[in-house]
Length: 71
Image 1 (cartoon, rainbow, N blue to C red):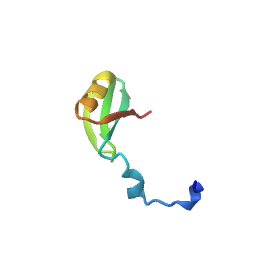
Image 2: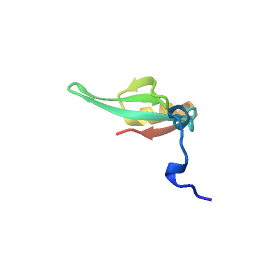
Image 3: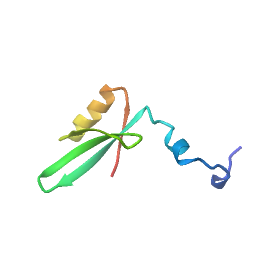
């Protein structure tokens, strides 16, 4: 059975919960001095800042998390 989207209501906390311990996000940051990449936990906590996108993804995978890009 498929429920219409309006039939299910999640609190903001419940909406964030799926994958919270399995996903980390890579966010590009562009500044006048160059670009960096921030690594964020699913709850928005900044975990690290690196200079290379591939390094960011490798760090995330090294910690048994699944990387995802933010634009």
